[in-house]
Length: 256
Image (cartoon, rainbow, N blue to C red; front, top):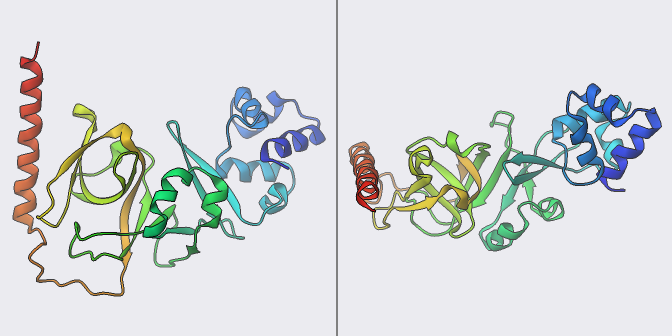
């Protein structure tokens, strides 16, 4: 039975109208209608509240021990899986699965099939792990697994921090990000390996953003790597990017 049918069935068993059910959940009646018609999916916290109202565990309510929960960011949906204790798993996206992830990132069945693991040292949150290709972020080596925490609002991206971005045009990239969304709707992506030139990306190209929190590698990075930026070089890079933004503004003012 689909989740929308289950919600409708359990609500009717209780003898509640959609409006009465919505009041108990603290949401609008129109949302209950959307959930029951399958036009939207409730977030995990709301599913847990529904199960409580129906005097059921989340597992029995859903009929599946491995829950796929949907989180909304604008028009995008984040799908995660949780274990029997309702704690988020860390889904792992191998490099060879990167292309498939671009098509299946919002598909509950696809995400359920991804490898999963736990990392107890991380605080509770929503994480995903991505295997990195290429040498653009040395000393982070190819084959390194970067673990990122989900960023719900792209405006929260912090200048100079590293993120895994799932994008429409560039695929899955791991870069140092400079956020100019409020100024011109763009992100500047910078590689720590100076052999790769920075580039810009429209904010609406980003499907998911994951703030890098940890990495796993079987190779130890070379701390003397010539490809690593110093603090002075990063500062100079930020200034150059700001000058480029200023030039773009001036060019825009001059254009008819």
